[in-house]
Length: 224
Image (cartoon, rainbow, N blue to C red; front, top):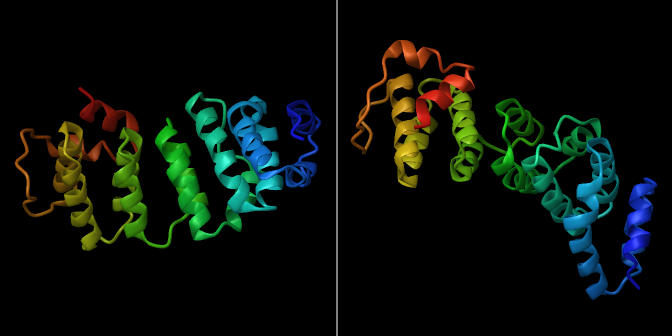
């Protein structure tokens, strides 16, 4: 039978290796309730170090069963400013993560990243299989920081890469004032030929050069 107190005690006393075996002793319905309890209540109570140690220990036993539960809690903690991805346990897990694991991690956590350095670190720890996949995921995440990470990723590509123009067009298709502004910045910075959109703004070349490695300037140019 599920005991929330016993599960809480295992986590509080850092007996993380005992958690999977305890969960395995429960019925299917109890395991589902335990997953909700972990993701919404118990895991968010852990410190940064405790969370990632529990993550690395428990998820490694059965990634399919536990990764989603931990990512649900992690996304909440990152949104609240209580969790960072700079942790040796998380880094060790990512070093053996599958492409599917990496995509799940990025899709869950990137929308809540509020620091571009943390976002870049996450992309480095969880690389996707191609530039196209990385750019597509960032494009669909649609946050100011992810748009900035798109720009920085494009800067590392060969200037003749077709991914630069393709990304600008994909951003235009999202629609919205900020998307059009991001596409315009990409067009101007990389000297792209005309894009299938009429832009209503103009940015001087000296302002474009200040965007390199400067998120504050990026935010200033894109936010009303």
